[in-house]
Image (cartoon, rainbow, N blue to C red; front, side, top):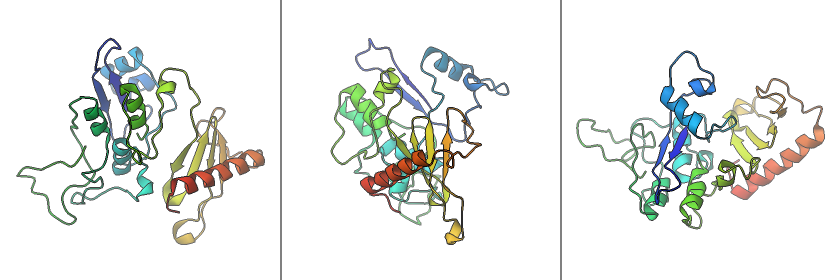
Length: 251
């Protein structure tokens, strides 16, 4: 995903978010691709900020879009990939990223793939008629709110945090964040370290053990060093459990 804003001299800079499905780290020229020319994306990277350790909130369509628009992790509400005729996953009354911009006087819109449900459950969609849309990375709501000097309503965007400091180079390390993986495995990232909880496996038939990686030395996560750093693993395991309890996430 790339984010572009107008010059700081503008009273209300334009903001464009480009969200692409199945775009890998090395699929564009700015990150080393030689197969497909991406000159416009490369130019955005060259003239702006290029992140080498940035992540979307989920590895699939629906939960990543849900998190981007609401500032809430999809796994908090069991949001997964939806069939074409699924009901809306975001209430029409929910506070969303476009609503934040409307508060600041913007006109907001979304173009392209929706994949967040449409119509009532089980209701076929007539693609020959008018298809009415529903309401329009988790951290974008709080970050844009700070940029626009707007307030996020209490109780909304529960998992969003302000990353404006990181964008301005004032807070490179940021806060720890939690990751939901397949088979209910959860992970915690803090600085260079990533801890992954043990997996019970499908139907509790046994899964993988807990894992610990130093991403600075091993960005590909090829060597589990949990046996070498048991105290670090124990501390991160405790912090992960605390985050789960604080956020009220379903276990």
